Length: 94
Image (cartoon, rainbow, N blue to C red; front, side, top):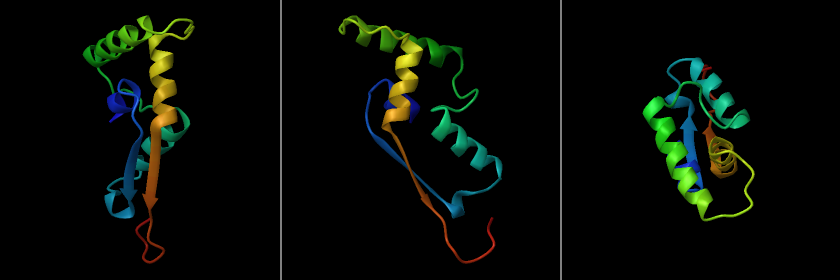
């Protein structure tokens, strides 16, 4: 999903309902996605190299960009990420 957000620069809606909550750590992941624009340790070395390469290719066609490829990637992720939280007011799931 994050590659679509950052490399392809496409708007994406992530739907998350209370039924998807298996562990409370999921809330920490959502918090990280909303505040930082990424999840810690989500990408391995190969993924980071691919992201760097793809964004660098795109930046070569654009002049005057003073951000690093990873800064561009994170900025796009934050801009394109939309979260739809579905929580039931009934029950004690939380």
